Length: 306
Image 1 (cartoon, rainbow, N blue to C red):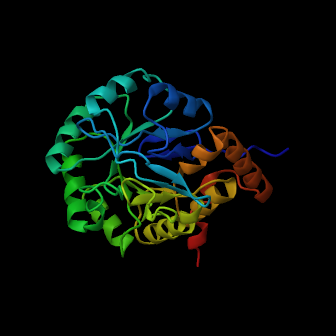
Image 2: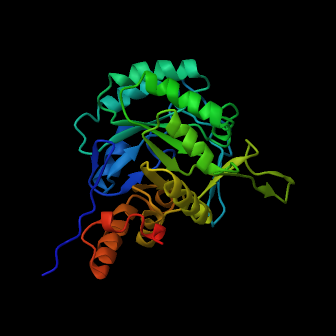
Image 3: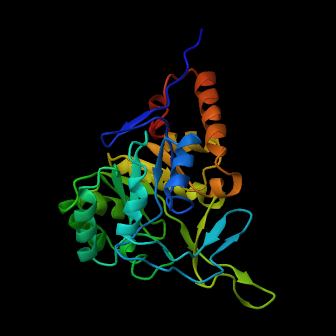
């Protein structure tokens, strides 16, 4: 009689019942939605990126489906930290880690955010977004290792929770940026954020998005994300959350073998709804059973073997 493989992930002092985590951005702005994501099978959730102050975001159109991926230029709309914390307060007791995605336009804002969030025990960890490709003042941070290290250090100094830094693929050397984040005190990394891109409506001769440039997500960027996870985990001993175009159990296994500790799902939910969690989890168990693995720990990092 075969034993069902275990899918739980222990990292950052947290326990995820499986390696599938909601990525920042697609959902994650209201408590009922976050609760539904967990009930649908997710092992954890990352909220939408929240800033210190409310932000309107970019005008429409803000998103376009390109068949091979989604191109968005939302502009980080959010109600601001204090208002969002009231929303999260209603999730107290949720049996899954809640990771708060944050951004800041200055180190002073980060310090203030860190102080406010430190005493908020509903949040298990923070994911620092330094790489939104369609908001000036944020996208530039992830390209500069000095800024990345300084931002992370400022946050860590005032936040008593694990800090995950979400990295941009829009750089020449992502390992150098990852090293800077770790030097600043990052406890983990997320690779990758969306790829800066654009689309043009040829009938009117204008960019499709009001923000002109956007971030490309979905299956088109998956090989880039796998490469980034592999490069980072080849050089650094730090937990990495893989993110970028994951749609199937095969994709999850690919990221795990590249070295990812767990993965984050985004665009696939926009296309397939919340049922994707159970579909992928079934595929994961089927793969592990078929290959004789007792847990995902036995799969992680296999592609690094020489």
